Image 1 (tube, rainbow, N blue to C red):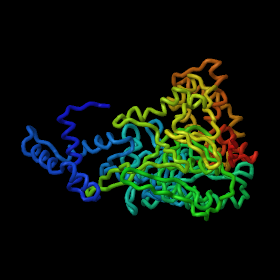
Image 2 (tube, helix red, strand yellow; image 1 turned 120 degrees about the vertical axis):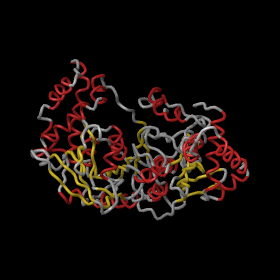
Image 3 (cartoon, one colour; image 1 turned 135 degrees about the vertical axis):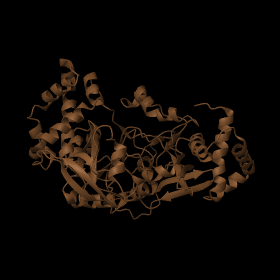
Image 4 (spheres, helix red, strand yellow; image 1 turned 60 degrees about the vertical axis):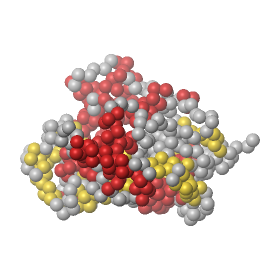
Amino acid sequence: MKRYSPAIMVLCIFAGIIIGVYMTYDKAVKSALKYNGASKVDELMQLVHMNYVDSISMDEIIETAMPKILADLDPHSTYIPAKDLEATNADLKSSFSGIGVRFVIEQDTLHITDVIRGGPSEQVGLLAGDLLITVNDTLFVGEPCTNEAAMSKLKGPKGTNVKLGIKRYGSDNLLHFDITRGDIPLESIEVYYTIDNRWGYIMIERFAENTFSEFIIAMVKLLQKECEGVIIDVRGNGGGYLGVALQIANEFLGKDDIIVYTEGVHQERLIERANGYGNFQQMPLVILTDETSASASEILAGTVQDNDRGTIIGRRTFGIGLVQQPFEFNDGSAVRLTIARYHTPSGRCIQKPYTKGEDEEYAMDIAHRYERGEFFSQDSIHQNDSLIYKTQMGRTVYGGGGIMPDIFVSSDTTDITSYFTQVVTKGLIRQYTFAYSNNNRPTLSAFKTYEPMLEYLKKQNLLEEFIAYAEAKGIKPTYWQIQKSKKRIEQSIYSNIIYNIQGMLEHTKYINTFDPTVKRAIEILEKGESFPVAVVE
């Protein structure tokens, strides 16, 4: 933990506390100040203001002190300045105002990867593969082209205009488009489809405002295709609104089954139970997790596991079990303060251990897991034997840090070489596939699903082309490196091109054909083993 001089620390702490005296956002906070020397804080602030040797900004002191105070509590209590609050909340909203494109920045140029259906950009004729060159007649390539700058220029109030200069494949001249910004829907479930005409697959990217309605729509469409069971993929899902995760869990649980309960020193135990009206209570269920599944994702996985309602497959989840409540200040800033802990139905808290004030060590936990071999071997995961709990059927589960899956699937790195690591780290595969996609877009766009496109790509000697491309960039492989990493490099090339041309759905369909976790889930469903069996002692 960083060390500060006592004088500065005292000043920072009192400066952070004093803001609560003037911001009437919660009676409990004002009460706490009353009993912790608010008058003394007033006196200190007045002394500093009237007597300090240099001119200072009390507002700046307060803004600096707030995050330091909260960081000393726990890793997830945070201060959000007014200028950042809207952006912080944006990902969990159902829509935002903008032009309706997805993009990436490659070689200092913004590449449009997808045009959102029904959005302003589609209406004026923007296409995937277009390169953004100017914004409002100002050059937007090179150093000015950053993700932050692009978001700032393309987003904006509904009804406002922005003029874009576009370079399009096959056109020598810059194309100009005047776009009126509008409401752009944010989908948290872009990918759902049936595997082998039997098993539904739903990827939930985050738990946002509209996620539950999106989930129900996805399930209805899967059932129309006579889906016999469902795989819910929350790998990479960092959480979001807990209430949405509870709604989804409720759809699979029986009446009065506990979903989750919360408890804190100032928060009485609050138990959330299923209401018995879930539409999919008998549906075979598998949930996929990994080390980036966090918070609400872990609650969903934990309640399914503790109620013996389905099978969890993948790797141990992140381990966030703290409840944050937002409190807003009059100046537009806010704090997200931890007020309670989540507990799964068996009673376990999934919050991984942390030492107050040591955020850096906490943030490095995933790296430490990798170094210990947790991604590759279940035996490398050391469960806390003092935190043993039982599911409804008597199966053993552990508390003290994330949700351990029922079936562990390791991360396969046997075909990774230093060559593959270099070309990925330097972004060469992505750069090559972007160029290839743009140069061959008319031909590739004729394919509507990934299967025929894949057959075409396999005949184009792309591996040899890429090796030459990477060598021109200064990275030359040995023969054995290519032999060892050949399949992985080819899969990366194909999947990138499929994404560039056909989008996330077809990209995911292709990836899932060789994803070991998805393949294991299908195996469990086909064997009829998604419902865990009771332990007989």
